[in-house]
Image (tube, rainbow, N blue to C red):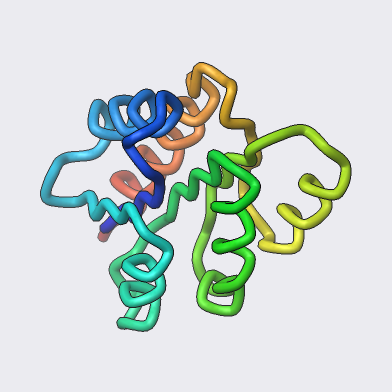
Length: 127
């Protein structure tokens, strides 16, 4: 099981979210990417060990970069964090087929709950 996290830690949302994820996922099971190029390179590799990706689009520019690699995200379960609550942003976000959507201004407790549930399911479903 691998969790892929994309987000920049330079902003407050990225730092908050990374702390939440690191509290739930063992370090050896977490891959962190701070650029869309790095994320794209990872997504071009075999995905059989990737359980889920948490994608933080903290700004509209960042969201545009994520949308530009949407074809690489097609077979990945995604938790998507959007930069705002605008109708067009939400509609474009749903085109990525995320399992869960929240917003960059949240406290990410909802992300922690979803991740916890996914991780429990992964652990209990192993043979």
